[in-house]
Amino acid sequence: MQNTLKKIQSTISSWQEKMKDLLSKVEDQLGRQRFVIGIDVGTSSVKVVQMADVDGKMTVIKSALVDIGGVPGSQEEALASLKTALIGIETKGAKVVAIVNCPQTCARKIVAPHMPKKELSQAVKWEAKNAILFSIDEALIDFEILGEVSEKNIRKYVVAVAAAPKDTVDRLVALFSKVGIEISALIPISLSLQNWLVYSKRKEDILAIVEMGASVTELNIYREGQLAFSRKLPVAGVDITKAMTSTLMSSQGKVELSVGEAEKIKKEQGIPTGEETELVDGKILPSQILSLVRPCVEQLAGEIERSFDFFREESHGGKVDKIILFGGGANLKGLVESLKRELEIDIEIGDSLKDIPVLPKAVTDKEGAGLRFDLAIGAILNKGDKINLLPIELKEKTKRFVENMSLKGIAVGAVVSLLLFYTGMHIQLFAYNKKMAALKLEQRTLQPQLNQLRGKILIGGILKDKPYWGDVLKEISHLIPPEIYLTYLRTENDTVRLKGDILRGDEGPQAVLSRFMLTLEEGIFQDVSLVTTQKKTGSVNIAEFEITCMVE
Image (cartoon, rainbow, N blue to C red; front, side, top):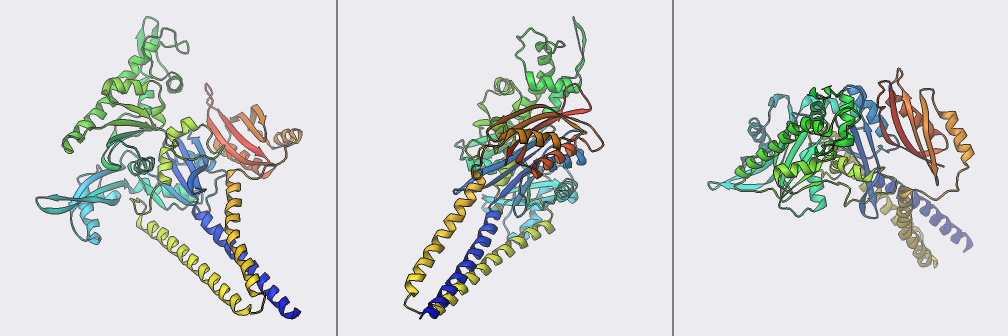
């Protein structure tokens, strides 16, 4: 009898270990699939947001915003900034969705003949020839059926079509490939904003969203959460900066700002009211700044009004209820007030993080981030059956990957079922019911324990002892490279905040900073996160940075 019991116990023990191993692998695989990363590579900055399922809700667990230095549009500078933004963000096994945007990228709503969906692709391509502003032969096109209409008793499809130049898509795919990322979808601005709009459950019947970037501004109008109108506008953030560099003649003499001075004043002062009398930076009056930027603001308002008129005529009286501003350019002080005066419509600054859970320290500047992370968050909220502007071969590769993962899940389930059957066939003694009851209880409790453990890891890990700050300071002093010198250091609880300057060398400031952050993570520091990096005011060869990190 004792030998028989020992055999049963051995079988049960072996079964338990196999079950734990299988469940661990399943949990690890499913956990990775629940991580989604949205990436927005703009002209002036890279925005990255990572979200995961925490307690049943998609939650922001990490984010980064890195300015792109050097010549606008430089692939090398964009690559360095992307590498920096991805520090500390786990991309292996995660779903990655990116934004494609350039002056030619566009989205349109068209009406196509009702036909089998296999044939619809060619019909949409033919109809899109008149809707996009560049050669159809140089474009990557995808579409989504929004619904059906009847014209003279003939059924037709209402279709949202997006197009982007092949060169733009190829450059983005190559950029992500250099950092080891295979993106699963590439979507336009209009779809990303629509994803956010649907998620946030806005109540306005007709809503306009203006995404104002450094070099591209796009206006999209949505009716009941679906794209109804899309147009690029000719005024962006850089145009306002350039306007401020125009030469002025006044009683004080000739006034002319450099691009750097104009950008600094634009960020700090915004659009003045014109009533201020004190010189800005000892060089230019607020009234002079207003006279320089007013034409740009009026042009922007005029383009928005013309777009509304066209939409109203096309939709037979559709009236926009509200405008939401997103993008770095929308952060310009006084812009909302100026547009309200010109357009006489309700305008608000967007906040893409308003209804989304955010883990502590996942976002450094939550207020400003909500304005600039909108496209990255909209990318994360994208559904798989929507528009995807990746080349067809990459779409097929993603589809095969998803199918393989599904087959692996089925295989794991089959193995678990066989294991249960095998164990059930071999446990036949009086202790069977008692042992199996205990085993099933352990099986039921195992998954919640794994989920709880994973949740703790996401939220910040188990609390550790307070660090010995003498060792911390000694470690920092040993790791600082010669190209970096610190100007500020502050400790609070287990967090260290560092500020400093980067001397330009052969590698470039982004590469130097990336190497320094990686070196920190190899030592006693973890969760090294970039807060900001930018050129130092008044200096061509020095860049400023700020980072935070946790002490193990």
